[in-house]
Length: 403
Image (cartoon, rainbow, N blue to C red; front, side, top):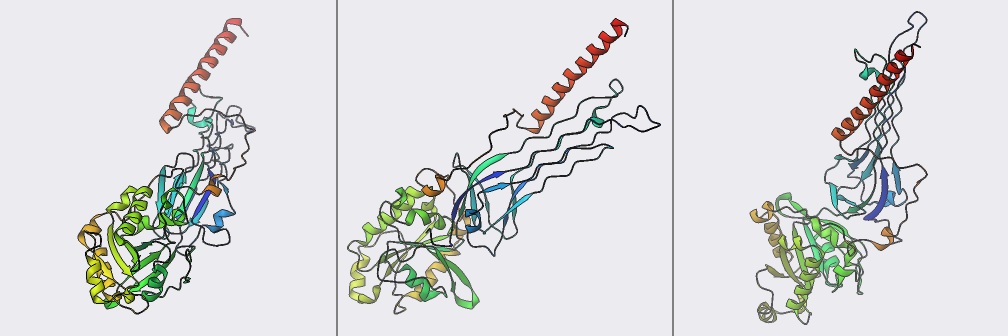
């Protein structure tokens, strides 16, 4: 995967902009000796925004841009001038990108439509200038609000292909051959395991100009959910599929056992995958006659629609497309959510991405800020009251000394 342009997993560090501080300026003019406060508000910090782009198909750009920082808002100025807002940073990602918290693995959001925008990190609000705090008893406030701090977060972006049907099977089960036979896709086909090194999509034509999308992923081996083989890197792509097409070759020694192994790997990866519709296709059936097929039907798994196919001769492909179309458009399948997410854990992460080290500037001293807007307002008013008390004490002391 290091030499491939298809990058479907990347870890980046994002930081929104902090809000600009409000101004404590006082109006000064030649003929206005006591103009009063006229400090303006600070500008808000820039947002970090995700935007879906249907022309993108990989996260390769983010592999070489690991730090994405929005700019800070500027401070307010005199004459009630509001500071300039910070510039937003827009991250364009392919449709089907899912975002997770890199520290906890918690699912955050997803992009499913072209042009869809999600504010991943919100910029800090700008502080209000001293003009907002002038009262009848305090006509010259000497304070203004500071801007809210920036938000920094490391996130993991996962790309999950959007397809109606996902192919699941062991290496050399004939998945790529089937995709090339019923669609215009041209995946790599060879007679050795793990020929498919990255997922591929194909549009399957159906009757009356209708079609559906089929997704092929690298072969799954036993233990893939624990990190063996290539399956772990690509099992995420079938989380978005409406129907899972299991493919087992006709020369398998035990079809039912192979099906149970594949099903168990999906269960270990994400238990919610068990709720998806499943279809079983016995590939390479051109080596079987009708009598052998009848005998094999007694050994097949129960409760799952099964069809015998041969992608080379075209045997059973029409029946397979009919079966898949019915499953895709069945009422039970439409009632279920076809997008399934699971939180990231140590088995579902890419090791070389997690070992990536962010070099952060920790020279600035950390300062505590309230988390919510309400707490932020309450904290500031407490600070304002203490300033008023100091002003009152200073005025009383000045009056008592007669100065």
